[in-house]
Length: 302
Image 1 (spheres, helix red, strand yellow):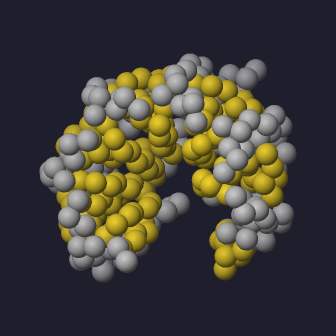
Image 2 (cartoon, helix red, strand yellow):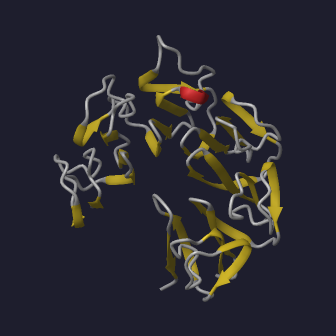
């Protein structure tokens, strides 16, 4: 079911009308769906479907046509995880292979090449090397992914150190961030100011990238181009949005920090900035999700 803005047909309703209440997309076997300007979804039979904006071939249909209802990408039946990015799309198959398509600027497709006048984009899925990818995150032109061996890899634009490689160098193919115990990852963006948060298997929480208004949780606004630890060792879940972060601990508490211009930090205050974690009332929080834009959603235990 989808609702909200529909300028590019991203709601999958075969039109571009906005909707203010949930409306069903045809079908009953949807499995993993993410709605953005370009929308991607998999079904339980392993098929991949796309709809919405397609100016850079990000629907994977080998064309630039806009589709306002789901259309299958190829005929493969082993698609598992999807992640629509800005003018690009990413998906992981059940065999652990990672695929990308769309705009190649800044090397964000991870294919060891950048956009050129003769090859501005790829309009069908192309494999990024490797066979053990388990998670993909990113926004705008910076992307990161974790492998099943606990390694963390980043590529794309790096003007704010969002790739975590202790420099501002752009990489057009995945480059590993040190460590083999990374377990969870979330990325956010404001303009080109990319930032990431990640949790290790020991419960420590790390952040890097742009730090305007303090979303890296270091009690300052200094940019960090390699991961820095946020105090604590019992972090369990992380969500990163526009200049802010939200995280859960194993005791069910929820914490937030960064920009709260619209009250998105959940502290009953607008137009504030908090540069280190502050607890949101409650001890029975269960999941947290970064919304598309400056906001969060969370669930509690029943």
